[in-house]
Length: 333
Ligand SMILES: C=CC1=C(C)c2cc3[nH]c(cc4nc(cc5[nH]c(cc1n2)c(C)c5CCC(=O)O)C(CCC(=O)O)=C4C)c(C)c3C=C
Ligand SMILES: [Fe+2]
Ligand SMILES: [Fe+2]
Image (tube, rainbow, N blue to C red):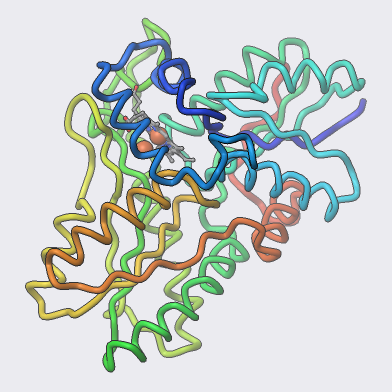
C-alpha cells in the first residue's frame, strides 16, 4: 500500500475569458445569465494583480499551491493538490497519483467547515475519480486548535491597531461564506451541483454551526489579550449572485446594526477562508469597505492566513491524525 495526502480546493480561472466555463463548473453545469458572468468578470478584474497579464497566478491558485508546498515540506512526503472547479482538476491529480503508485488517499479540503455545498461536492468529485483506490476523507476540522490560533494571530495585530486608531474598543466581525437556505434545511434535496435524484437529506447541514464554532474558538484564543464575548459578532458573507434566499445575518445588515449601536469602526476576520481570493479582495476590501464608509464606519480587515506557519502546523496535525478531525471511514471508491 502506498498512501499520499491530497488537498482539495476550489480553484479559480487564470484569465477573465475563462469565467463562463469556470462558473459552469461551480454550478454543476447550470448556465448563469450573461450579466452574472460579466459582473464576476468585473469583480475579478478589480482584484487583477497582474494575473491577467500572465505575470503571476491568481491569488487563490497561488496560495492554494503554496499551502500544498509548505505542507509537503513539513511532512517530508509528496502532497498533491486538486481543484474542483479549475486546473489542476481533482480527476487529473488522482490520475497522477495512480500513475505514481498511490493506492490510498488521505483527502483534506482547504475548507475547514463541513458543508454539502463545498466539502460534500469535493467528496463526490474525488470518489468518482478515485475508483478502486482507498480513500480516507476528512469531512471537517473547524475546531482544530491551531486553526483558531492561526486566525487569532492575524486578528490580534489589526484589532490592536483599530482600537488604537479609534481610541476605543472596536468590534470584530467574524464571517464565513453564506449558503442557500435550502442546503441547511432538513429535508432539502436540492443542493448546488447535486446529481439529479440526490436523496432527501435527513439532517441539517453542519456548516452554520461549525462556522460559528471556529469564530468562538478564535475569540477564546484572543482572551489572552483581553478580548471578551462583547467584542465580537458573526455574519455570513457573499450571498450568492443568483437564485433563492441565502442564510444570514448578512454583513450589510450587521454593519448597519453596529452603526446604530454607536460603533465607529469594525475589524473583519473571515474565518471560513484560508487565503486571499475574490470574496476577500473584492467583497470585503472593496464592496464592504464602501458599505461601511457610506455608513460612517471605518473597516479594517485581518490579513488572510495564506502562508501562515501556524495554519501549516494545523494541517500537519489533521493529516497525521494527531488531531482527531471528523473523518469518513476508509472506503474503496
Ligand atoms: C460553504 C459554502 C461555500 C464556500 C465555502 C464557498 C467558497 C467559495 N466560493 C467561491 C466562488 C464562487 N462560488 C459561487 C457559488 C456558490 N458558492 C457556494 C457555496 C460556497 N462557496 C454555493 C452554494 C454557490 C451557488 C452555486 C450554484 O449552483 O448556484 C460562485 C458563482 C457565483 C455566485 O453565485 O456567487 C463563485 C464564483 C470561491 C472562490 C470560494 C472560496 C475559495
Ligand atoms: Fe462559492
Ligand atoms: Fe461566493
